[in-house]
Length: 280
Image 1 (cartoon, one colour):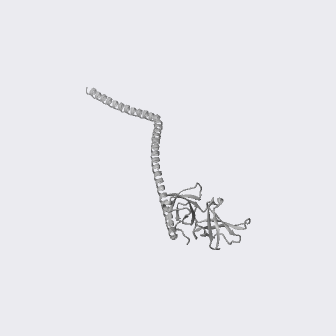
Image 2: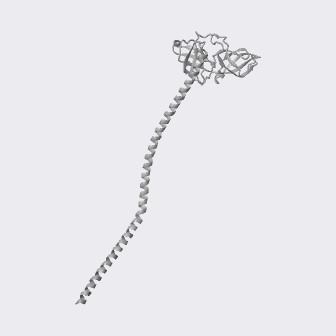
Image 3: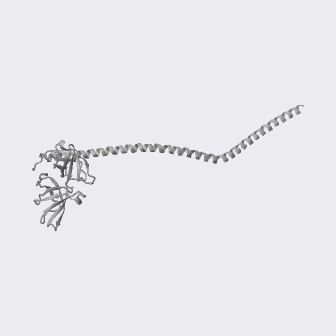
């Protein structure tokens, strides 16, 4: 009886052991199967996931680039506007400085011509050429300006007043073909005529005529007004001799004169009013 009882216990114990072993084996097999299945699925899906991830990142990067580009464009526009504003301000400062220098020089000229009654004026228009052959100023009869008044700039003689309005006047310059001024060459003590010439006016120059054939005139000689006219007083600087030529047909010499005044850019002038001008 005891034998069978012990045997029964052994069988139960063995059954428990077998069941435990089988359970462990089943668990291990199920785990390995899951791992194999999982690896298989991942092996198939991994490249797809990689492509999807790349596309997603690419789209995200593209929209990020577009957003950044728009921001950069707006920032560039702001910077460009600021730069243009600075350039405009810098240009204005340069213009104010240049104007200030011109006015200082004009004031100096006014002091040099203290013996005359002078008035400053601004150029408001000119003929449609590169040179200031004929131009208009913003002073007229209301300011005491009259026809044949002499017009000066810092460099020297410009010309004379031809027409006068209440608040404007027209100036004919030395280089205009209709202009004529008596000239004096101090070095050789000779007089001549400074005339406007159409061809030379295209170069901003004029012509010196009525010189004797034996004149000792040479390049670099200074020409002043002779004072032998009712318009121009003596001693106003006209220009310098640029070249000297001989005219065999008239047995005389003539020269090309470069005026001291810059006829490419005249903004302000000084007018010697006729009623007060007198030969020194």
